Length: 120
Image 1: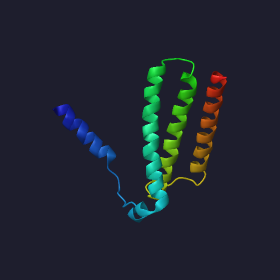
Image 2: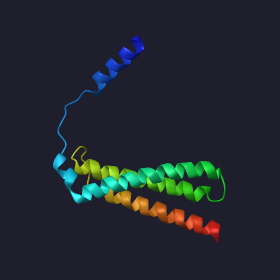
Image 3: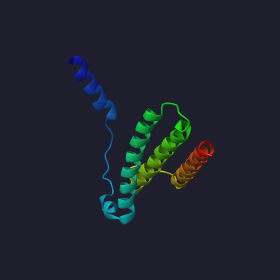
Image 4: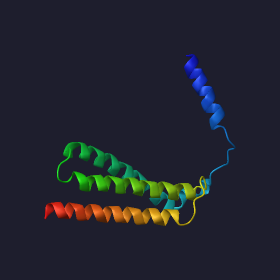
């Protein structure tokens, strides 16, 4: 019990900072809603690819699906960065989100080429 109280006290003291209100008006914006939908789909695809990797267990398509899993994770990061920027919670430079999109496209393309190489 003492550990829990001590850990809670440390978390409260270290985690306290000034609080600012998020830009709630941007939630109703269609691009933001689309980012929410895409983020939800990405989380589902990430979970499905992890389960698929468990089924493949080092087979021929394991490497390509592993690359797809990394691509879904990068896509999730890109969507999360866009949402955090839209809500003005976290300020990111303008080049971060497009750079993440380039990484996502490159990973998906590399995964497709790896799968094509196996399937040919």
